[in-house]
Length: 633
Image (cartoon, rainbow, N blue to C red):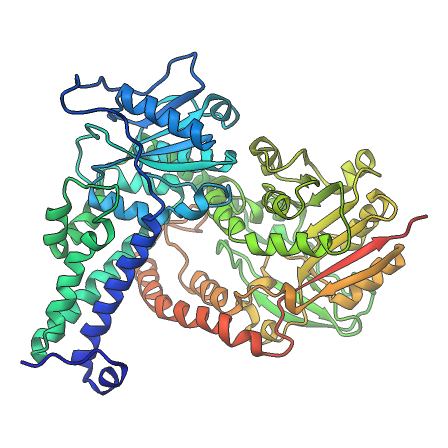
């Protein structure tokens, strides 16, 4: 039997039953190579322990007089030799947090480490999601105190949450392999679901990706065998060999490597089953109680009706007073799929876009709840951390025109912008202001020098004249009166200081084409979307001179990708969400499964189009930035 050539020409001429197994084989090998590269920075810490030494006692290091303390999973065994070596490694490397990775970590957990831990950025970037092995974490006592974490033992879910939190509070963190004589004697996937949920990793998505790869390999093996092609068996062999390709030659020496590799086609679905059906940990039960309390509260509010959260419709434009209004878009809640319908109208004279009828203050509280904090805090944290390049670009725009000593970021959230901007302007002190509690958390993390909680107008008098720069990044569109916010900024900013404003661009061509699926309309949160000309005119009337503006440079390449996400949320929201208007039905679950299956290939195509095609479309910017300077006198 002749083997087909893997050249591109041969591939294009092959029948599908031969080409598909070949493509799957390439995908499996490429995925394994990528995971191996992610583990490449991992290093081993020598502890000096050997089998001839007495077996160490179990338990975390909680000695009161030491600089470092340990937080470990229930049942972990960490020897005194390992603890001393880990402390020495942390001190020598200048680390505040060190995640201890057992050398004999089971294969499935080792692959989780490769999938979810970005080791190259983990060391110096607090915005990188915290991750580790789920075994033990060494941290300075000062950091543990600041993060409100007590040394001791925790269940897997609680340890996952602590691991993620400590990374956010630490300037420098790392992972290191330790030769632990023993790890908790439990099945490889025991506590895995809780651990991943604690880290903030979507478990269904992780299982779905694994299932997609497994199914692709099985289909490739079947089609190859049916057509008599050897590539089906090669695909299956590559799938079994993947753990070797990822882990061989690394500091990790899983005790179950051979078994996990040889039996991988059988063990993979068994691992899913164990992960999804594992008993709830105490951390998960506490989370479930919070979700049930939220569910009960939402159901009571739905009983009273959500129409009460809208003000009466106004007949004129809040920007220019014109009565020439047309409907721009009507949609539901695009982020959480809470009940309600919302309308954005555009003024025919000044082109200002605004929500009409507008949410009441009680409606704002209702629709913002569990988006950026509460039950939605983990998702929001990851989304905000992904804005890293945009934060850097905003700071660089100001750095090109000024060297500020003090900077106030209004609507700062947790302070992600201040943390990134410090890398561009290291001599600038960044403060933040927000109505949410996250701003104080950002100050405790060290991302902000000061965190002010409250409305800008209420706090402005005490802040007047303190700042060289005030920024409003995607803030004005959330406010009931953007012009009043600009008045406050003009009074607060130091003479000669700069105001930086970034907003969604309501004149985006893709925004008009995609309609309600264009995320920057973001109903019901966005109350006003101001055309760039209107904003510049308003700034000039308040004594500002426009220094520079960015449109294409401010574009964020996500229009089509997030349109798919919005469509998924619209047509098939998660049936178990605590704010669902009713109990999930079988039809809801089936719709979600079908939508997720369809979304996979659509997301791949949308990502490619966002990167390659959308930048070629004239006027496709979805955001703009304006930098203005306040007059000296």
